[in-house]
Image 1: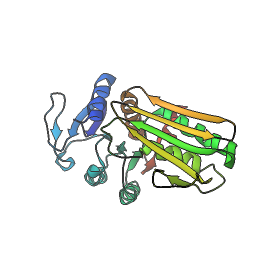
Image 2 (image 1 turned 60 degrees about the vertical axis):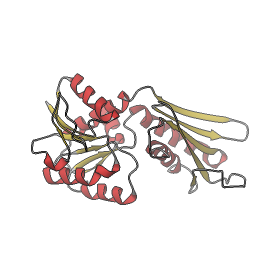
Image 3 (image 1 turned 180 degrees about the vertical axis):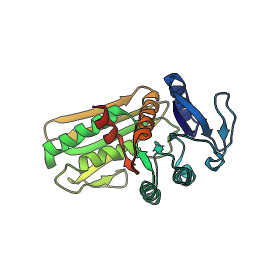
Image 4 (image 1 turned 120 degrees about the vertical axis):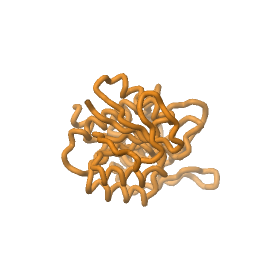
Length: 254
């Protein structure tokens, strides 16, 4: 039986992760963390990670960057692997994650969808094939409640293109204040927020006389919860500390 902790257990994604775990049959949610400590019927809810005294094989976090210090402290002090599915981390927080990964296994991804990670590979290969003859633009769309922009996934896609381009691109996030033609060495990243859009990401390669569009649409949030649970199962088998990502998980599945 896989024993799992859920950080942000009463949030939108936390509730879906709890449901996915319950439906799995071989997963036990031993506790959840919620700032207000609102009770649940299916597992105990604690207001702070430090209050947890039991055993767990992995922790899944869909909360906010503000929760990171307490989660890292719990993971390192109790040797509990962490699945960090939250986005919007600062550079200082990313550095803290890297440091903690020297002591425990940590799985971090801006997007837990397997499909998105296939899209990243396609973007990388397309950028390598087209070189500097096509302009690259990324458009991401999410629901009105999402607070960070651009999305972590959009930045992951930009990085996938960046690694294959024959130049060092500049990310441009808005053009309203820029009264000049588009520079050749740019990757434009645009954000849309509205309604209940789960998550759409489109990468546009625009050439002189042709356009290539690569797109992924998430139809429900379950795809991210399922991916996070896959990551928890993966970490439960990992014996060495380190920072892991969807790349290692996909390689194991394939």
